[in-house]
Length: 369
Image (cartoon, rainbow, N blue to C red):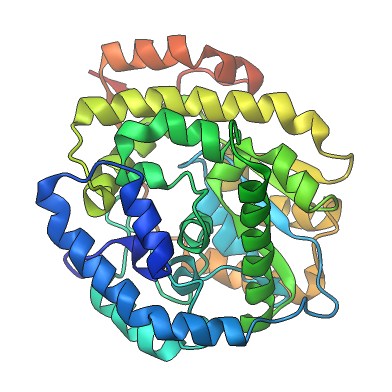
């Protein structure tokens, strides 16, 4: 495993220059991050001619394209594992790690892929999940590098977390033209996954979409939704570890552990309550809800059920590759956790709705200190 270091440029390096300027102007950049802002702006400027080339080669909707499958669920609920697993299907089309950062440079990949290789570790520092420029990735960074409605701006400007949730998840106070631009970007992103990937069945994984069911149905009325959920205590401990390692690599503002914990405590109920309020909007036969703990015990069985109940794809074509992937993951070592009594009581109290909605208790194997 390569040693992880904070990259000298931002994930905004895949933006158009005008989009990058709008992003930087939307928040307060602390002086210690000025060098990252300047270097990222330089990359965006150098990439501008390639963006014009990309526009000249804009594509029509691929023939035989299918409505997407959206994998949703709070961060650290198993969405990444589920996404990687389903994308073993040869019919799958997905946003790659490369496309997630450089959605505007799909026809000049050879240049920017080499650039990414120099700045990306081979594993995620928080959980040792393998990274690769051609592996499946979530799409929120891509949306943010295409237009300006992206919740992931809170990674750059965490002090704007609540405002960003209002605007980019609930779309409060957002002009219709900006919503239309977001929708157009999403459609373009999916078209590109179908053109530049092997299959034509789009599988999108994005935790933010857990709170956007209404807008996604406006855009894709026939879309399928796969929601995976996990014990809230484990989610809290896992996302805390994840954010503490991730934010320093992305932020333009310094954050303390207390600030991130407070953010997490607000984020989970806002996102999950919104999902619980909206899941009734999903037409019958277009939603499958999956308990992570059950899935972890019998992944092949539940994957087969997903294919069957969502009419997802051809199981006979996919099952051999899925089984092979599962066998390759058999030696993966999960993180172990402990929690203070204060933290545990806080989670149980503030996230009580989730324990009830998803039928959970405090896990017996969590060490309370």
